[in-house]
Length: 214
Image (cartoon, rainbow, N blue to C red; front, side):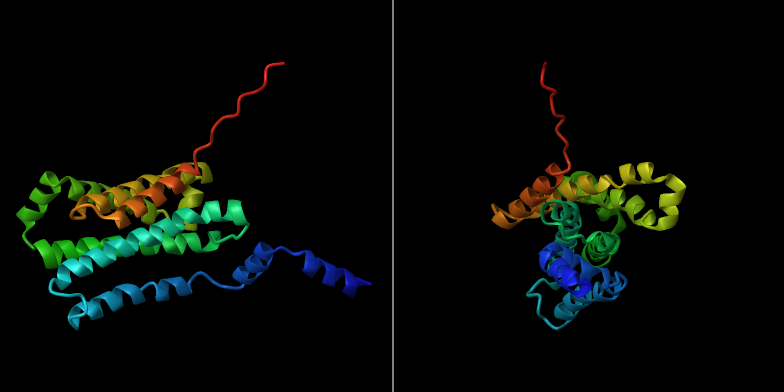
């Protein structure tokens, strides 16, 4: 009798539940190792001529775009759980930290390999709005990366910690706007990124329901 009941339970189990059971067996830590592969591959391409005539600019661009892509995945975790039942929450912290890692590398390439002159770096941050926006986005990521651990949650308290990490929405918007502004001419891809970010952020907005008048 118990065997028949178990079989019926498996049959009635939704696809999302099956996926979640499989995901529960997958640890999050391998993401940190796998996350090193993309920037290493981009660097290899740059060193071997695979990034075209301006490898430094191309490397800078690829790192920034990849950071935005991973950040979009981070934003999509909650809507995905709400809409489909698939729960990727256990991987969100690793993805968030990898986003910071990629943005840091993006900034490092710009500072060390591209501009190089300290006075010029400061002048660009002040005079070029897309760089100003990108730098603000990076600075907002710093407290998020520092507090992405259980100790910070206990120290700040879950409520305060969640409020702090709502800065993720702002950094995502700033990153997408930065990408749109630095693109030369009219390009649809940066606008798609910006639209995707705005939609994912909009899913967090809770519209209060009006009570019907008796």
